[in-house]
Length: 190
Image (cartoon, rainbow, N blue to C red; front, top):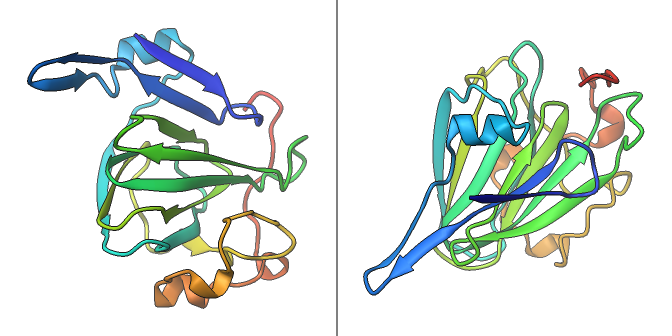
C-alpha cells in the first residue's frame, strides 16, 4: 500500500510507501511498477543514482536534463534528511515558475516524483545524508544543465542564508534564470 498525494503542482507527487515493522526493524516496497501504474504513475525507470553529502546545507541544484534526455525523477533519502525542491519551468504551464518543496528523510520514507520540465534540487538538513534517485531517461552530459539555486525570479525558500549553502563549482557558476535557454514547453495533456 502506498499513499500518493499532490504537492500543489499537477504531476508532482509525494509518495509515501507503507512500512511493515517488527522487532527486527521494517520493510517497505519503494516502487512496484504494476501498483504505481494503477495509481497513475507509469514510468519506465532505467537509471538509479546514489549521492552522499557529508555536511548539512549541502545544496545540489537546481538541475535539469534538456530534451530528448529530459528526466522524470523519483527521489528518496536512505540516510539523513533533505529539503527537496521542484520548480515548474514549462513555458505556458498554468503553474509556470511555481515551486514546491518536501522534507524527505530516512525516517519518514517519503519520496518526491519530479516530472520532466522541472528544475530539481535539494539541500541536506542533516550531516551524512544519502539520497537515491531513479530516472526514466539516461544521463547525457550534452543535455545537463543548472539554474542558480537562489535566483530571485524563482524565489525558492531554502530557509537558510544562501551564503551558508555548500555548492559544487558547477552549481556556484550556474546561470541566472534570465540567462536560461529554456527547452521546456507545457502540453495540456502532459
